[in-house]
Length: 203
Image: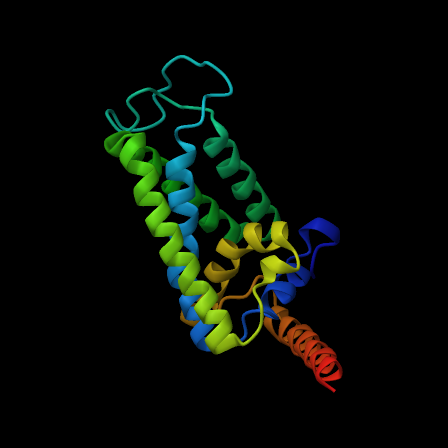
């Protein structure tokens, strides 16, 4: 059974899925969504720490030269991870692991590049990835991105959505029996409603 309210994965997935039903657009998002998250964490590494903590040996020696930095990038990683786990323990735990890997690797890359080079690399990567996604919507999906209707939900759900899509395609995974069938019904209803509204505007 789905969870109510904020943690209703079925509702979130159906909302995002209604904007990403074209197979090519889905693949484009699978390729570009996580790099967007990764490069965002790269640039957020340069935000100041929220707390000053002593060196914490939670990671292999040399991986984090200055210990655990509790900056905006880290807090964002924690929030995303906890939210995904609350949505679905199994897939959410995998998503949380990937988020922390992105944070650690992004921090390492940011330190290696330095701010003067990192922001240029991040800008180029973000422009490339976002352009690819807008092409996916304009050329293949033929529907505006979800972020134009619900920015917060689209940005937060995007990494988890593409992960669930990948798990479903590769292993037929679903959070609970009947999940994808129920989501498919909701997505089809949403798309039909959108098409009807679009047709009324044209006529």
